[in-house]
Image 1 (cartoon, one colour):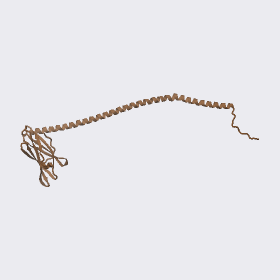
Image 2 (cartoon, helix red, strand yellow; image 1 turned 135 degrees about the horizontal axis):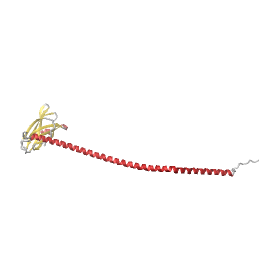
Image 3 (tube, helix red, strand yellow; image 1 turned 90 degrees about the vertical axis):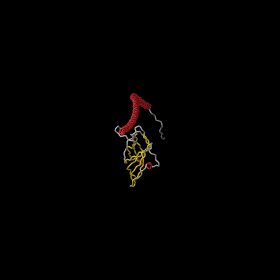
Image 4 (tube, helix red, strand yellow; image 1 turned 120 degrees about the horizontal axis):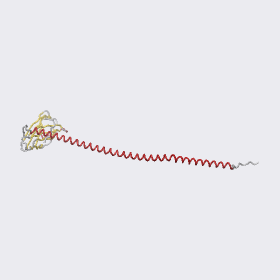
Length: 245
């Protein structure tokens, strides 16, 4: 008896196939309905919120732009005020310096007037050309700055003109010594210092004393244009003298 081979085909009842297709259709229909419902819910809930968020973003950008504009304006104003304050401070410093210079000039003029009043006052004794004071002060490089005041009240209308020289007397290496005008200026045939004034004049300059020399006295000589010479000696004195004219 021959054996039966299994068949590759299966006989399915018609009603079962119909039921299977109906189930698949219903599943697809339910899935589509779910998508439609989800879209409906999203369009009615998420869309308004998205519009509100977009409007809020626009307002925030406008507010940020306004704040940035205000900040830039404040920075510019701060820079302008700082520059104005700097200019005001510089101008004030210049004014203060100018006032200080004027105060110094006024003080010097007052000192000159006081000196002039003492010099030519009604009770003062009239004197010819002479040296009122000779003072020295140390300066840089081992030099000495001198200030020598010349006066003349005997002839109030005349102009005194000429040249001034001096020598410094003192001690060097334990012996008396004198340093002449040429040596004080460290040059041969050094010209005298010119003077020209009506009542008084202050002569300023610098000299160099030799090493190991101790000054004790200064001897000033005035050679006028009329060949008359005036010689006066003063003890060495270190101080700051007032200006003259």
